[in-house]
Image 1 (cartoon, helix red, strand yellow):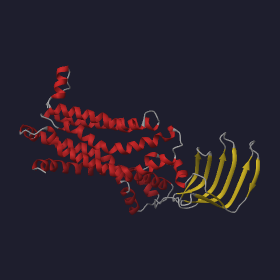
Image 2 (cartoon, rainbow, N blue to C red):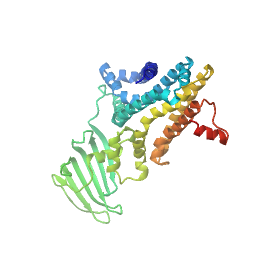
Image 3 (cartoon, rainbow, N blue to C red):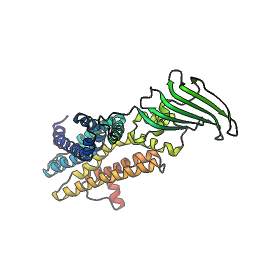
Image 4 (cartoon, helix red, strand yellow):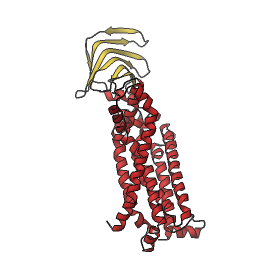
Length: 387
């Protein structure tokens, strides 16, 4: 690594650390002010509050990393420009791409970090936050996760089977409590009903064991009860359902990690396209979100480099405006993707692709030392072909 690269990185690291720490502090204070009364009412211990916020760090990191990178890069490049260091580097024969190479390397490193967090830790942190806030509203001062969730309804459209579970354990290895399973034929007529006090699933044998007092009822084509039996226990090894597939009926796409999204789409492939649209959209979004950090470098670098003092604030304002426009477009595209209005790929990647092109054009303008886009064919040819 050359001394030039070390100098540029040293100029960037400290503002970046300050920006990230500042945004984390602002978020922490704002969230604590919003929830402090609930913490007091539920008599939550300081240790539990610290654990609550420590668990949110991955989810908050993927939010503050791009905006912290943006402001730190704008500050660093604007300061170097005002000190005429950028002009000196270019005058020494270095290309703009060579000057910015350390910042693109930093952007790739932060993209990798964001991708690591976004793969599993961040979505789980978001899910944990909602669960613990619900426990806080219920007066659970220890913020412990409940052992059961009440009232599960799952429809297996492939096998025409409807499950109702009174108490679904959060640990799927534990028994399901209070079950009613309704079997229908292709026409939607009820043919069988199974009632059980509890059920356990044996994964190795792919078998359900129903106990705690069971009842099997069979119906004729007119819907009249044909016969019923009351065995103490019943084992069924030909049903396709598993506990995680039954629990998936109430899962939220934004709280699932990449492996969980893949698993959900695989076990629920019989769902309709609109039902699966949110999960397909968020699967692509999990892959697209980290690259926002690299796009930030492409957009902010040309706007942060200025050749006169009067352009400093214009560049900073333009970069911040583009960033918030990116946030708006991201939320809009995600909403359209969840609603099955546009394909999941375009819902996830459109903002990154669009602003990458914007950043590349701005970078080209800055590299050619121009202040506007080409307006004639000759200018366009020169804009594209000039080295």
